[in-house]
Amino acid sequence: MENELTLQPKRFFYDTWLLKTAKYFEILKISFLEEAVYPINLATDGFVIFINIWIYFLLYQTGYELTGNSSINGLTVPMVIWILTLAKGLQESRITAPQISESIQDGTFAYKISRPYSYIYFMFFRSFGQTLPYLLANIAISSIFCRIIIGPLPISAISVLAGILLFMLGFLIDFYISMVIGLMALWIEKTDSIWWLYGKLKLTLGGVLIPIALLPDVLRKIAEYLPFSQIFYTPVYTVFQFQPNTFFRYLAIECFWVLLLGVSAILIFRKGMKYVTSNGG
Amino acid sequence: MSLRTAVKYIDLTFEIKKRNLLSEMEYRVSFLLQMIGMITNDLGWLAVWLMVFARFPNLNGWTSNELIIFQSVTALAWGLVYFFASGADMISTYITEGTMDHFLTFPKNLLWHISISETYVSSLSDIIFALGLFAFSKDVSITGYLILITVGVLAALVAYSFMVIANTLTFFFGNFKQGAWSLINAFAHLTDSPQSVYKGGLKFISIFILPAFFVGMVPVTLIKSFTLGQFGLLILAVLAILFIAIKFFYFGLKRYESGNLININL
Image 1 (cartoon, rainbow over the protein chains, first blue to last red):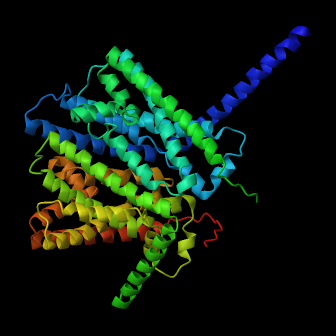
Image 2 (cartoon, helix red, strand yellow; image 1 turned 180 degrees about the horizontal axis):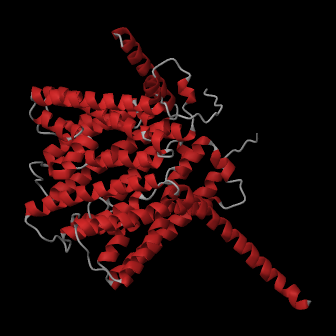
Image 3 (cartoon, rainbow over the protein chains, first blue to last red; image 1 turned 60 degrees about the vertical axis):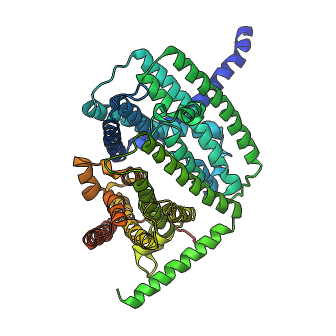
């Protein structure tokens, strides 16, 4: 009897923890199924990637040919195409970014924050669940197209695992930045232009349109430390150009940004709560 | 459509846009942020391509001058589309959610009404950016500006028509919001990249499937060296794409299913 009593708080803790976790995984599952149920959308996304590979291939092939280079800063045309295509594949899989500001504008935000879950966790798992089907499809499509058009590049199990780890941290960075921008709708109503600006920063300083290694030296050094390149470029670059020293440097940079942006997002969320008014009915 | 009706529609379009603009300007900080944000966005985009051209100074005859003209035309075209007709981008949402009923109850032309119902005020920055950027081109002149504005409007009609076609596909596929967005995205990528490198299959796609050539390459060529033949070809292409878009939309509309939602629009 005594044993049972002493065990109860522990069991209660685990049960509650399991219930809480299960709730968020259920959100992830539902969000995943919501998107995966429409294969035509996944196929169209694949078409976008296909067009992108083609553009990149012709652009960089022409550029390398006309300048008479076979390699620039250690990057050959096949490497550029593989890196850009996979980075683009990861970028195209993001579909949830403006959801927070939209929910603030249409009023559903006030409803969601009163539900029995953490809004930040809810949005994270929803975002991840919605991204996952596109992510898997895009990686598969990008890899198949690149393999056919460009041919394979050597990779190892360690480089892939390192890339996945960096990608997960990059996802968190993207999520926190999206959250901060989305929550800005509480103060400035419309955040469209900031989304577009953020999107362009990911394309440019994020290495999706032009590899960071091909940027001018000063800009390359700055871009390597900014959060934008950590989201897509760094994970993909690591898969194809794995070096332990570089990997640990990227890991440290990503951890720094995750912490800084995570704390900022939570503080802004708490401050923003003071601006929310909820009416019944 | 008679001339009188056309004038009425143009009048109404400007009246609606004026009201949308004034309504957006009520939130001054938001309005200014949107305008400044979009200009910064455009400048950033230009900077990236200038970096590409700094690495590869000549891409099949295109140098940074052609890039400036190209960016001016595309920014002007997309700016016009998103200022005057961004509602076309909502067609897919209305179909998926069954909320097109609101527009169906009005006596005016349905596609026109949906298209002009939304206004991205920040796209005004695109238009300002385009006109300002062209001043830095080697081909700048009054005639150059007149051609830029003319081909910019024609390119906008092509982009608008494609937007309508991509969104209309939702009538046939159910939930196609993400798919329509992806198709427009693919089209935008084709209009954003230096088209002088396109060849083979990609060139074919850019002319006949995702008609990006009529938003980029053809207008740039016309600004560089205007010929009546090419101008006529552009007008023919615009008319054909617009005709297909309108016919396709009304053909798809027969499949529309109302969501039976009651909305109050104030």
